[in-house]
Amino acid sequence: MSGGGNTAYGRKSFQRSKAHFTDRITADGRDGWPVEAGRYRLVVSRACPWASRAVISRRLLGLEDALSLAIADPIQDDRSWRFTLDPDDRDPVLGIRFLSEAFDKRETDYPGGVSVPAIVDVPSGELVTNDYQRITLDLATEWRDLHREGAPDLYPQARRDEIDSVMADVYEDVNNGVYRAGFATGQDEYEGACARLFRRLELLAERLAGQRYLVGDTITEADIRLFTTLVRFDTVYHGHFKCNRWKLTENQVLWAYARDLYQTPGFGDTVDFDHIKRHYYQVHSGINPTGIVPLGPDLAGWLTPHHRQQLGGSPFGDGTPPGPVPEAERVPARGRP
Image 1 (cartoon, one colour):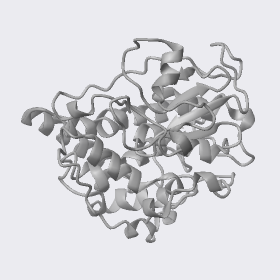
Image 2 (cartoon, rainbow, N blue to C red):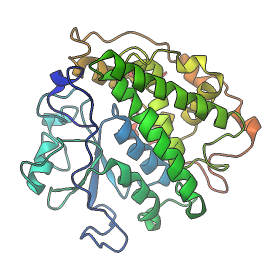
Image 3 (spheres, one colour):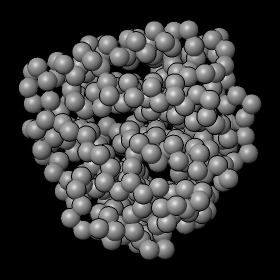
Image 4 (cartoon, rainbow, N blue to C red):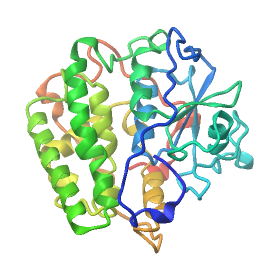
């Protein structure tokens, strides 16, 4: 998710920027960035669905010790993501106040704005990549030698075509669709995006009515990408983005599926509803000029039984769930149900 120019949200048609920095961190280091424990820092906002994918993947794969985590303040200013949650308003590892400093160190006058997730090379302080579509796939494949024992295969070779196909539809109509509806500047633009969003959600519900996960019998990258939109749906997209034909809680299949994932270690324990609400309602001043953050919805339902295990399958297959969340990365109580 990009930052800067926040007052423009809701005043111009939405266009998802492609990542400008698309270098990859690989096992063979072919782009000049070899996988190396301790060398890189993942910069995220817990408010951002695109960044949350990387947080979930990192935790599921057990990469916490290999790839350190920087969490930006959910409230941006026009210089974008800032480290005002840290002492002295600086990231303690990179020593910078704004993520833009790492972008500027790599290149000046880059297009597309400052976005998360971003991976920064700690020794040089330079941005390596902000390719939100690729980062998690590489964590699942190129970083394999550093995965924890029992880590899931989130992008299994035999299923990649199916995973890619499902993810393409989810990206176009759901992940991006909520933004196209929320930032629409005309009635027809809004209605078109909203219609496509809910039609896709209905098709996904049909698919998930008879199977526990989107592809195969275990969690994959496809589930991560759908989850990060669903977990924000009633909290921000239903009201703030006017995606209000129905609430997630009113769709029996998707609500149970989302709860199942939320209660799976590595998913819900990375979600900060406080950051999510404050970011959307306070940053998008073109949509919500008062900056008032709603009190609801009630989050208690996320912890209720989902009964999805009756469909078979298991989240980690022959593997194991990740261990406890590192103390420094625990979501504060105000961000949890």
